[in-house]
Image (cartoon, rainbow, N blue to C red; front, side):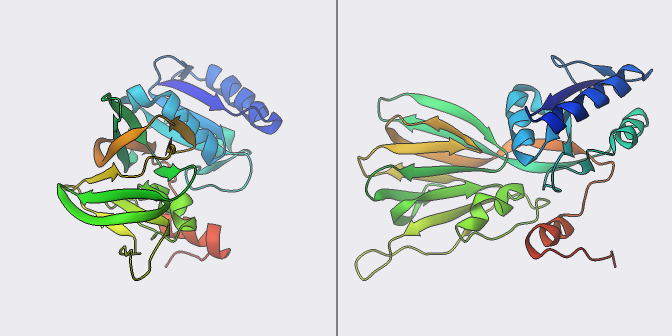
Length: 270
């Protein structure tokens, strides 16, 4: 199996990456290949795994991912820094087992007339206006749902629902569900302007279209990256036909992960 190692620049992560490479080099069935991997191992945290995903986005339908965390347990990282040998043993006995999660497809229509398939988000995409109130019409499929006024919108995947989406009042969704979510960011609600004010869960056969009505400068993000500050006419969000695959050697159950991260107490399995 060909393996790519993607590490952040921290000293502890680099040490783990070095140890991992040394053990892979000693294996008869594994090799390090950063150009055409079958497995991508990120070393760091969830941010590092997001970066690794985008680095290999063009071949994401042909790879599986594994995360080694060098700090606290993250949502995408199932292995700790002291478990390198155990992970390599699992890689050597790999039989293709995996779990897949939905991805968010983002397409932008610019004011200049250009149309861009921006790419895929593993966590979320946000649209915000830099100055003043963002005004936009929100369509579900091709039907106008509401006219939004506020700071912006967050569209997230189920696995990304525990990230920025949660901080703006969105629901937490099990990533085994094939859906995307729209959460409002500081919407304006009064006698004149009214939005639903609740997260929207969008089914696989539906899509979201956001048509900008305000003229202020906007910022469009994809996961942790700013991808556009150009004037935007509209954005279309869909559940991607592609999915991200994680090697399922010891994939932590989602609700246990949520409990450990936000409630702070681990419970034994029933």
